[in-house]
Length: 217
Image 1 (cartoon, rainbow, N blue to C red):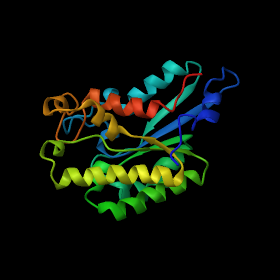
Image 2 (cartoon, helix red, strand yellow):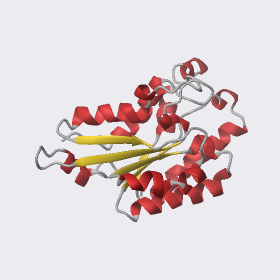
Image 3 (cartoon, rainbow, N blue to C red):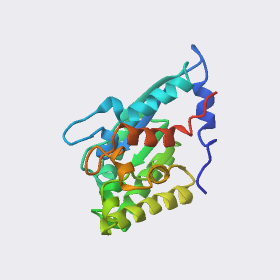
Image 4 (spheres, helix red, strand yellow):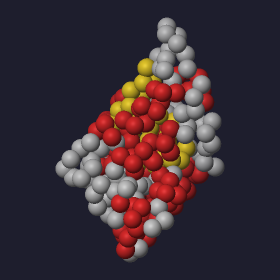
Protein backbone atom coordinates (compact mmCIF):
# COMPACT_ATOMS: atom_id res chain seq x y z
CA UNK A 1 0.00 0.00 0.00
CA UNK A 2 1.27 3.46 -0.89
CA UNK A 3 2.24 5.36 2.22
CA UNK A 4 0.19 8.28 3.52
CA UNK A 5 1.40 11.71 4.55
CA UNK A 6 2.74 10.29 7.84
CA UNK A 7 5.43 8.34 5.93
CA UNK A 8 8.22 10.73 6.96
CA UNK A 9 7.04 11.35 10.53
CA UNK A 10 10.15 10.01 12.35
CA UNK A 11 12.37 12.16 10.13
CA UNK A 12 10.11 15.20 10.50
CA UNK A 13 10.43 14.97 14.27
CA UNK A 14 14.18 15.26 13.83
CA UNK A 15 13.78 18.18 11.45
CA UNK A 16 11.77 20.06 14.07
CA UNK A 17 14.61 19.91 16.61
CA UNK A 18 16.61 23.02 17.38
CA UNK A 19 20.36 23.44 17.68
CA UNK A 20 22.31 21.82 19.29
CA UNK A 21 20.04 18.77 19.10
CA UNK A 22 19.48 18.84 15.34
CA UNK A 23 21.48 17.32 12.50
CA UNK A 24 21.88 17.81 8.78
CA UNK A 25 19.14 16.22 6.64
CA UNK A 26 19.99 15.17 3.09
CA UNK A 27 17.32 14.85 0.40
CA UNK A 28 18.42 13.61 -3.03
CA UNK A 29 16.39 14.27 -6.18
CA UNK A 30 17.39 11.64 -8.73
CA UNK A 31 16.18 11.49 -12.31
CA UNK A 32 16.36 13.02 -15.77
CA UNK A 33 16.22 16.52 -17.25
CA UNK A 34 13.18 17.73 -15.30
CA UNK A 35 14.70 17.54 -11.79
CA UNK A 36 18.02 18.58 -13.38
CA UNK A 37 16.35 21.91 -14.09
CA UNK A 38 16.15 22.01 -17.88
CA UNK A 39 13.44 24.29 -19.19
CA UNK A 40 13.77 25.14 -22.91
CA UNK A 41 16.84 23.04 -23.71
CA UNK A 42 19.71 23.84 -23.26
CA UNK A 43 18.60 26.46 -20.69
CA UNK A 44 18.92 25.20 -17.09
CA UNK A 45 16.73 27.14 -14.67
CA UNK A 46 17.96 25.67 -11.40
CA UNK A 47 16.22 28.02 -9.01
CA UNK A 48 12.78 27.50 -10.54
CA UNK A 49 13.02 23.72 -10.84
CA UNK A 50 11.21 21.52 -8.37
CA UNK A 51 14.18 20.44 -6.21
CA UNK A 52 14.87 24.08 -5.31
CA UNK A 53 11.17 24.88 -4.94
CA UNK A 54 10.84 21.85 -2.67
CA UNK A 55 13.77 23.08 -0.58
CA UNK A 56 12.07 26.43 -0.11
CA UNK A 57 8.81 24.80 0.95
CA UNK A 58 10.64 22.59 3.44
CA UNK A 59 12.48 25.53 4.98
CA UNK A 60 9.23 27.46 5.38
CA UNK A 61 7.84 24.55 7.39
CA UNK A 62 11.02 23.59 9.26
CA UNK A 63 12.88 26.80 10.08
CA UNK A 64 15.26 25.11 12.54
CA UNK A 65 16.33 22.33 10.20
CA UNK A 66 19.64 22.17 8.35
CA UNK A 67 18.67 20.64 5.00
CA UNK A 68 20.47 19.85 1.78
CA UNK A 69 18.47 19.14 -1.37
CA UNK A 70 20.99 17.46 -3.65
CA UNK A 71 20.30 17.03 -7.36
CA UNK A 72 21.81 13.93 -8.98
CA UNK A 73 19.67 14.14 -12.11
CA UNK A 74 21.13 14.00 -15.65
CA UNK A 75 19.35 15.30 -18.75
CA UNK A 76 18.50 12.61 -21.28
CA UNK A 77 19.00 9.73 -18.88
CA UNK A 78 16.55 6.87 -18.33
CA UNK A 79 16.11 4.69 -15.24
CA UNK A 80 18.69 2.15 -16.35
CA UNK A 81 21.35 4.85 -16.36
CA UNK A 82 20.12 6.10 -13.02
CA UNK A 83 20.27 2.63 -11.53
CA UNK A 84 23.81 2.05 -12.79
CA UNK A 85 25.13 5.06 -10.89
CA UNK A 86 22.76 4.91 -7.92
CA UNK A 87 25.31 3.71 -5.38
CA UNK A 88 28.08 6.05 -6.52
CA UNK A 89 26.03 9.21 -7.07
CA UNK A 90 23.06 8.85 -4.71
CA UNK A 91 23.84 6.56 -1.79
CA UNK A 92 27.23 8.22 -1.37
CA UNK A 93 25.41 11.31 -0.06
CA UNK A 94 23.91 9.26 2.78
CA UNK A 95 20.45 10.60 2.05
CA UNK A 96 17.50 10.52 4.43
CA UNK A 97 15.06 10.75 1.51
CA UNK A 98 15.42 9.96 -2.21
CA UNK A 99 12.99 11.03 -4.92
CA UNK A 100 13.03 9.16 -8.25
CA UNK A 101 11.71 10.67 -11.50
CA UNK A 102 12.48 8.94 -14.82
CA UNK A 103 9.22 8.10 -16.59
CA UNK A 104 9.37 10.70 -19.36
CA UNK A 105 12.54 9.07 -20.69
CA UNK A 106 11.67 5.48 -19.75
CA UNK A 107 9.41 5.23 -22.77
CA UNK A 108 12.60 4.58 -24.73
CA UNK A 109 13.33 1.37 -22.79
CA UNK A 110 9.79 0.06 -22.22
CA UNK A 111 7.86 -0.92 -19.13
CA UNK A 112 9.72 -4.13 -18.22
CA UNK A 113 13.21 -2.67 -18.34
CA UNK A 114 12.04 0.45 -16.54
CA UNK A 115 10.41 -1.60 -13.80
CA UNK A 116 13.60 -3.58 -13.23
CA UNK A 117 15.69 -0.42 -12.98
CA UNK A 118 13.26 1.32 -10.62
CA UNK A 119 13.11 -1.76 -8.42
CA UNK A 120 16.89 -1.87 -8.25
CA UNK A 121 17.00 1.71 -6.98
CA UNK A 122 14.11 1.27 -4.56
CA UNK A 123 15.59 -1.90 -3.08
CA UNK A 124 19.03 -0.32 -2.71
CA UNK A 125 17.57 2.67 -0.85
CA UNK A 126 15.29 0.64 1.41
CA UNK A 127 18.20 -1.68 2.17
CA UNK A 128 19.88 1.30 3.84
CA UNK A 129 16.70 2.49 5.61
CA UNK A 130 16.34 5.46 3.28
CA UNK A 131 12.85 6.82 2.69
CA UNK A 132 11.76 6.79 -0.95
CA UNK A 133 9.32 9.04 -2.81
CA UNK A 134 8.45 7.88 -6.33
CA UNK A 135 7.39 10.57 -8.81
CA UNK A 136 4.98 10.02 -11.67
CA UNK A 137 5.91 12.08 -14.73
CA UNK A 138 5.18 15.66 -15.57
CA UNK A 139 3.32 15.98 -18.87
CA UNK A 140 4.71 16.64 -22.34
CA UNK A 141 3.18 17.82 -25.60
CA UNK A 142 2.09 14.32 -26.61
CA UNK A 143 -1.06 15.08 -24.60
CA UNK A 144 -2.17 17.30 -27.48
CA UNK A 145 -1.98 14.39 -29.92
CA UNK A 146 -3.17 11.59 -27.62
CA UNK A 147 -0.84 9.33 -29.61
CA UNK A 148 1.20 6.25 -28.76
CA UNK A 149 3.80 8.32 -26.91
CA UNK A 150 1.05 9.69 -24.66
CA UNK A 151 -0.41 6.25 -24.02
CA UNK A 152 3.05 5.00 -23.08
CA UNK A 153 3.43 7.87 -20.60
CA UNK A 154 0.07 6.94 -19.05
CA UNK A 155 1.29 3.35 -18.68
CA UNK A 156 4.57 4.39 -17.09
CA UNK A 157 2.72 6.62 -14.62
CA UNK A 158 0.53 3.64 -13.72
CA UNK A 159 3.60 1.47 -13.21
CA UNK A 160 5.15 4.00 -10.82
CA UNK A 161 1.96 3.93 -8.75
CA UNK A 162 2.10 0.13 -8.70
CA UNK A 163 5.72 0.19 -7.53
CA UNK A 164 4.85 2.60 -4.73
CA UNK A 165 2.12 0.20 -3.60
CA UNK A 166 4.30 -2.87 -3.89
CA UNK A 167 7.22 -1.45 -1.90
CA UNK A 168 5.06 0.60 0.47
CA UNK A 169 6.86 3.84 -0.24
CA UNK A 170 5.56 7.34 -0.86
CA UNK A 171 4.07 8.53 -4.15
CA UNK A 172 4.25 12.05 -5.56
CA UNK A 173 1.62 11.77 -8.27
CA UNK A 174 2.61 14.75 -10.39
CA UNK A 175 0.88 13.23 -13.41
CA UNK A 176 -2.49 13.50 -11.65
CA UNK A 177 -1.63 17.00 -10.42
CA UNK A 178 -1.28 18.03 -14.07
CA UNK A 179 -4.53 16.22 -14.82
CA UNK A 180 -6.36 18.22 -12.17
CA UNK A 181 -5.14 21.50 -13.64
CA UNK A 182 -5.53 20.86 -17.37
CA UNK A 183 -8.90 20.50 -19.05
CA UNK A 184 -8.35 22.12 -22.45
CA UNK A 185 -5.34 22.66 -24.76
CA UNK A 186 -4.75 26.27 -23.71
CA UNK A 187 -4.22 25.16 -20.11
CA UNK A 188 -1.12 23.10 -20.87
CA UNK A 189 0.66 26.13 -22.35
CA UNK A 190 0.98 27.48 -18.83
CA UNK A 191 2.76 24.35 -17.65
CA UNK A 192 5.10 23.51 -20.56
CA UNK A 193 8.21 25.52 -21.36
CA UNK A 194 9.40 23.11 -24.05
CA UNK A 195 8.36 19.91 -25.80
CA UNK A 196 8.76 17.86 -22.63
CA UNK A 197 9.90 20.26 -19.90
CA UNK A 198 7.64 22.07 -17.46
CA UNK A 199 7.55 25.77 -16.70
CA UNK A 200 7.96 27.02 -13.15
CA UNK A 201 4.21 26.49 -12.72
CA UNK A 202 4.65 22.85 -13.72
CA UNK A 203 7.59 22.46 -11.38
CA UNK A 204 5.46 23.96 -8.60
CA UNK A 205 2.97 21.13 -9.08
CA UNK A 206 5.77 18.58 -8.70
CA UNK A 207 7.26 20.34 -5.66
CA UNK A 208 3.90 20.50 -3.91
CA UNK A 209 3.26 16.81 -4.54
CA UNK A 210 6.56 15.90 -2.85
CA UNK A 211 6.18 18.51 -0.14
CA UNK A 212 2.88 17.04 1.04
CA UNK A 213 4.97 14.50 2.96
CA UNK A 214 6.91 17.23 4.75
CA UNK A 215 4.15 18.14 7.18
CA UNK A 216 4.95 21.19 9.29
CA UNK A 217 5.76 20.59 12.96
